[in-house]
Image (cartoon, rainbow, N blue to C red):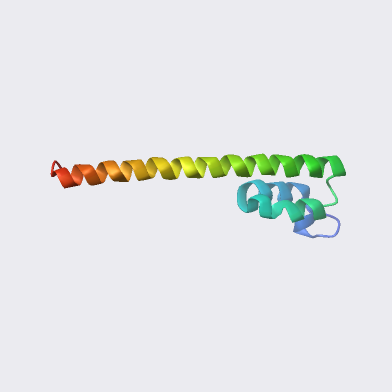
Length: 83
């Protein structure tokens, strides 16, 4: 899976993997630099990464809220002396 130029950041599969699993929206410059993607594909990937980022942000906030709720429950339990 090497490109003719031998540059890893021009490999479409490498760019997709980095964008969706490591860099998130910071990988979009790699998407636009990669010659393996056409204009419509770049636009589609930009929109997809945007939705993916918002979704992961929502999950992070929700996880934080649930963790905070559990911490408060644990504090109440410890203060009541029933542990």
